[in-house]
Structure formats: C-alpha cells, structure tokens
Length: 190
Image (cartoon, rainbow, N blue to C red):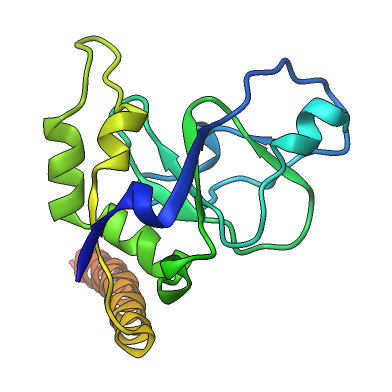
C-alpha cells in the first residue's frame, strides 16, 4: 500500500527567531548537519525557553526535512538531551497516531532520503538562485506502508551499507599510507 505523506504525518515549518550566546534550547540549523543528515557539530543551547518556543519543541521521532538549498536531506530526532527547535530551513514532520502507527520515523527518514524520493522532490522544487521544496510538494510525496519488520530489515541493511562504506574509506586510507611508506622506504635505500 502507498499513501501520501499528508495522510500519515503533520507537516509544519520551523521557527524563525534570533539566537543568543547562552540559553536553554538548541536552535537547529542546516549547517549543523552533513549532507547525509548526520549531526556534524556539538550542539550549544542558544535560545531562551518561552511559550513561543515551547510550541515548537521537537519530540523524539520527529523527522526534519531540509527544504532549502541544495542539501535536501531528512533526519530523525532520536536523541534525548537538550530541548531542540528547528529553524525555518526545515519542515518538521510528525507522524500521526492513526494508520501512521504502522510506519517507523527512521524508515520515513530513510525513504525521504532515497534517490527516488529525492528525484521527485528536486523535480518539483521552486526557485532558481535559492532552490526550495514547498510544503505542498512534500505533502504529496508517496510513502510505501510496509510491515514493521520489513521496515526494520531495510534500516538494518542501510546501516550495514553505511558501515561498509566507512570501512572501505578507512581501507583506502590505510592502503595509501602503506604505499606512501613503502615509497619512502625505497627512496631511503637509494
């Protein structure tokens, strides 16, 4: 079965607010993530908690989608430390409690990041200098609803694929170091 994202999730925009140097809440921005949606910095609280921020606090399992610019990744909020608020660079996707109980937020994140989904989103992006994906386009992304165990299996395979790539990259670096050392040793024997 397939359904539109709007049928299984609520989608809202992030918050626009000025930051401060010290605060209680982290203001998540696209610059905090790499192109794969993984945090690449240590988070620092830079907002003061208030009623406006309270309405925008992220929950465990929320999916952030970076809708502006060239890096249109999704990432799932799976950490329980500092309170977090998303900037306007993101749409916040929160799975509904209806038929959506049949979809894991991590699987939804994986599917949004899949090349098929990314092609659909980029083909429907608007703007020329600052490309963005509208909420309307995101709402009509078709999502496959498959059984939970299959979703978990897909996620395990994807995690193994990512780990394999990391190991291959490390192997390439090690081979390069060995080759460089062998070349240096050969030069020293001349």
